[in-house]
Image (cartoon, rainbow, N blue to C red; front, side, top):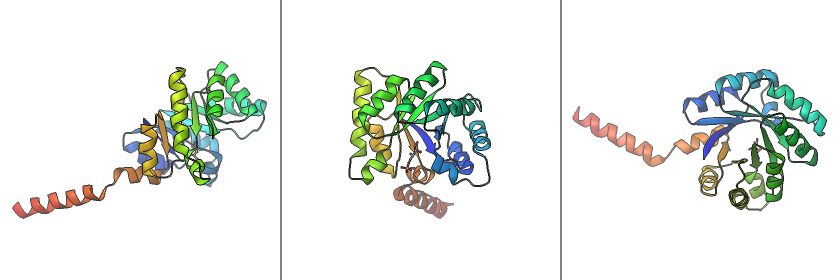
Length: 214
Ligand code: E4P
């Protein structure tokens, strides 16, 4: 499983990229809205210069024609832009059109396996099941990841599964175990993955012992 970061904040992206594990970035309109004082297109240029992997940029139109025109503009920013499209009937039409134009897509707001299968068959490069938001309403988000992974595997579907709406480190481990190809992780969760109190205690003890002898 690969790591993407789920943010539009360039400082977070740079810090994550410095770890050497970052394979891509996902943004969404809510994350972009948090970034005051910079245009969406300028921020996407900055991100695509920093990260060579897939950078998802979401369209906000609700009709296929609008999505296609917005997506073409976004895709023109850099070759590693992936157009993020909502899982709707109009979104599926747009995904098919982007597929024919050789533009990569990430179908977002996936909450059941039929949506994921439809998106894949329409030509999506990625599907993003939102596991945290399912957990929030008392469903099991991880079961959805496992189901989609099994269906894609059984039918030899190449669309990659991005475990999205990740809330804590256990989500990351379980997403990997359940067959997600990618987890897109907020910066605070990525930072938590690195830490373990026994690692910190171990370093402290090694240094203390070393200093006794030197
Ligand atoms: C993924 O592409 C989405 O941007 C994101 O994971 C949504 O997460 P949230 O449910 O924490 O807003």
